[in-house]
Length: 392
Image (cartoon, rainbow, N blue to C red):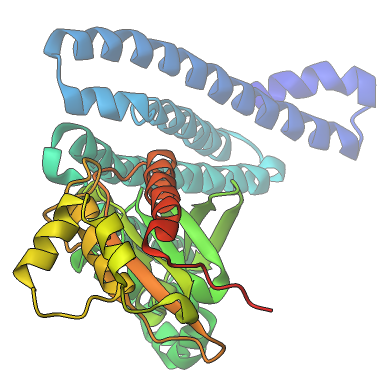
């Protein structure tokens, strides 16, 4: 009826030519599309109004999460898709044959549109679980679930794509899967990184190797920064210079990854730095030097405890500086603290290393503490007649 009405309007303009049928079909399809768009905005407004009041009355945190990621708004797409499909079926039933083909295509596209929207709704509902979990459970950072949910979303889309293809080919999904099995070796090669990424993301979460927000280092690739995102295929890491590196997810389990999380959780940073001393300045203490050092309480006590020992200036310096570190307010005394020798250089330098942990993880404060310690160390070397090694 609508088609005949449009034809009666177009007939005087196009003189009943073949273009009249094309124009009539285009107008009908355009009307369906306009109706679908109007339906979408109408339902979106109603959903926003009704669900907003409903969520405020219920005060449900999970419903707020679902609303924030626009899951409810997706139902407006389903409504517009239903309008398209119903309209196409009406055209097929009440029109002549020349517009049936376009209506059938529009009907199939409408069903595809509805189905994809359903997949989006399912994906958003699954991911809403992760958002709710991270916001309302204190142990969420320690036991993340985003890797499992992303795998679940991937399988939702895989199943959805199989159903779409089987519907388009008018065949059974099981028959389609049988055909896929025949070319599984090729698919494994094509999706090798994705399959490895799925396994790696699950293992990284299950074994607690890496979490979002962790500082990690991959020295082989000169990457050192914070993990921004862990997807099935890639891990995004923001370096200290604000560049973002993307590395394959499977590298989390196939490469050596240094995770700084335990250091951050301990609220402590390690000082591990050596001063190279001139080995020629390491000598036995004469009477004058011993008398000069006796005003230092820890040295005086050490000499009293070891009366028959020939004192070496470097030995006394190690004792003095070990005592200094043990009393330092910014050194973590629950961790190992020591002043030790390292393997000497062949050219004459004798490394004396300070090994300790600070009471803070903050980089700027750590560097200040470390600088203060070594500045004091350098200032005390001349008192013990020790010299810093200088390479000629």
